[in-house]
Image (cartoon, rainbow, N blue to C red; front, top):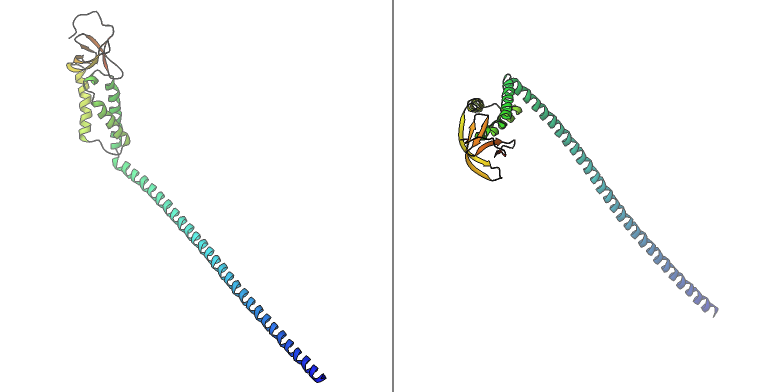
Length: 227
């Protein structure tokens, strides 16, 4: 009987020992699997971190290259600008040298055209020849720029206008034009210009205003017929 009991107890111990051993093996396997999983996650995180770091470094390197490229381009443009400025200065100096005495002619033509424009604008002859004003202004501006020569035609036209003013100053001329009557009505009628001294029409004396308009005098001299 005692032998049987002892055998039974021994068997129970062996069974318990085997169960305990199985539990320990399972626990070790669970620990190993957990460690493996943690190791894989750590490797994955490390790989993502390395990738992000590499991407940031690439962006930084790209930004630095772009900055260097822009700096080089800016320096190139500045050098080009300075070079062009010097070319302009050299070209102007060469032009001045080639023009030489012609620059003096520019000044003379500019002065003469400016004086003529001022004198003609207040002259009674301007009523009859208004188109010369635009020519004189254009010629004066052209000579002021000193960028191109006056043509033979322009010089001849300037000389012609000066001579015409002298000739017309001593002439009596009749021609049609718009005038403003004393009551404000505008009519087209023949007028007579007496040199650069007076201008009249059939009904009386006229006046040449600063705006270029011709109008009837409000108060007429006590005289007879005028034309």
